[in-house]
Image (tube, rainbow, N blue to C red):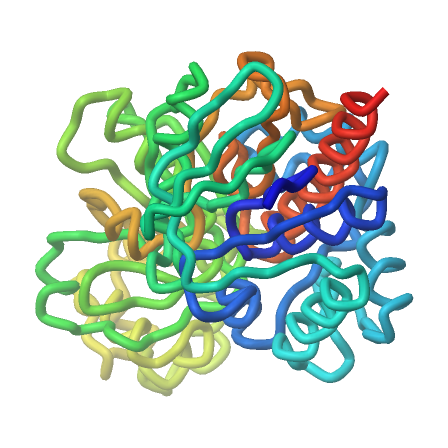
Length: 423
């Protein structure tokens, strides 16, 4: 059977592309090698599905450090407000949380997946699950998709929405890169982003701080000369392998790039518990607190400044006795404590693997894609959307916004292309 549009991959980008292609009059087939659609969508936002982010467009682009500017054209066609309208029209009421994140009022990712599947049915999109693709034979007027079971599917347009290499249990195993290369496309270097940091520091190996969270801190990666490369402010979590939590995840791509650029085994990352005060102000604060309660032990006077386990950990790196009072304090040691509170250094030797990352960095080179169509510049009737492209953002609804936006544009463009072919 021949189709106008075949979408390969049933993640957020593929679902949106299929819906949009069908809405625009194309006879559409969605194929996926797994047994469930929207598997990555179902686990996003901790199972609540962060469908988009409502930040203004310029800030939205800033939060997509991996080639976000490429999305200006796509956002002019279908942006975060379009995504909100799309879901609310399907009966999914949304609510805005901190940092512009948009969630369903139901807090259910399952609801989001279900309404998309229902929309596929309503629009008569044919869906084939458990259908792995072997290869794509690109033709002059039509393309043949060769399935692993030996079957061939003919189509006028192909939309590759096969994802990256992150979270492989959701089906993202990098299959689409080979099909893009067959059409003459370049795949840029792949690397993990939004992934926990790893460290060989003794206190990490000893699990001294494992499970400890630090909230609203600054975490900074430095170059070998000590200059700051990037800082993120949010929360972190110490693990048995290194540092996780949203601020560390956001920093991860900059750690990966720094290790590669400077050809070094580790880079320094510093943790700042008082982002709104400088070191001198923190030092004066420690002195004043001790001075105001001169008979109390330092462990009682300073204890509320940071979580207790972290406080004792930092204190152990100075010569200050926790039972000391103000009269016995040595100012150079107090300054050392202030330095540690402002810039505790951790040698970071990398990140967890790309398979453990939330998002894949790298992908189909954007120089070879038409930005307002998501069309291949190398092959007629070939389109891309979602994580297969060399686009990546921070967690917080930014990647899913890119997926839905590029999915919509690819679906619309592919449908228009097939109609043009019929003329």
